[in-house]
Image (tube, rainbow, N blue to C red; front, side):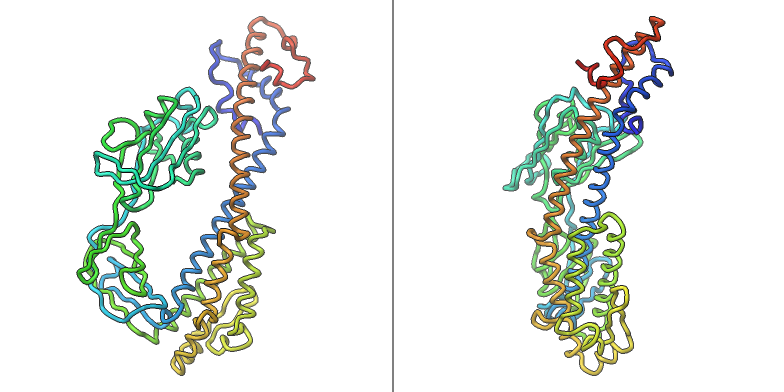
Length: 457
């Protein structure tokens, strides 16, 4: 309904005496004629937002499963990496894993910069005059006093009367790829901006245009106005067997050959990478669980925001094709001998006893079912998901299209809300004046047949 869409703004900025309940009721009735367009726009926007969210969930689910499939490639299936202090690091092996013991000293974890604005009483209240204002974000490094710009792309966002609130600014920054949000604390509402991890991802934010927006959102090292830094960007600092390593991420892929290391906390630990045939059964079970988690997610999306979606349909079809036509042959041939079959709902079913017996009898043969110079099931899933999530994939094209549609609809909604708010305010003013004169006649110049926008002339 109209009143649930912009009613919070309709009756503000009225300098006359407070309107009566009767005036409000009259305005409500007059504005109902505009309600259809508002409802239709909100419905379309909500549908697109649900689809965009579903596409993001689909991509994340595929990426998560691909990580498991990739870790099983080559010798990664039959090796293990064990930390003497799991709270300091965890690790998974890949196809190039090399047996050995590695001493690791995690001195510092990587983290992103966090900036926080001063508190506002409301997250939706207008900030400043609404004059066109540009926010520019540069990435680089800083020492607490001076900022050194890097070679990255400059991010620019325009703020005007349609989005000059904390909510609007956060949404505009988020649309531009910035991790921005509105947080609530004891003092009210504030804008929070989180940068990517790594010392070279520090931010400098300049604002040209409205002074109120500039005073709230600008940031430079050592400045006493604008955003304030609550956490500094920094790299991870680690030594591996005495060799110093610096990383912008807490995920290390080159510190130990053939091993992906996740840094969890500071401390010293030994990481042992070893050939381990018993690891095959564990990794196969992890693969089955990961695939079933993906399968459940696909079914859930098919019943929700991605019902009848082209990208989801292609993903399901291509993944099923890998299982049914792979050289290993699920469910009728070799994989079933290792205890893995295809269930009636598209899930993988694991017979653990049969799998362990197959590993004990011939571990290399079981390994080749999953990774074998690109021909194994894990190899093929890794490759296929790369195709399904690539820049030229249907999934990526849909994300870009829906994202643009959401931006267009959001802008239309802002324009419509602004027009209807002004329209309703004009009606309040006119009806109040009419009421004060004691007249029950129609509003001057209004016949009931013309658009209510005539009052804006």
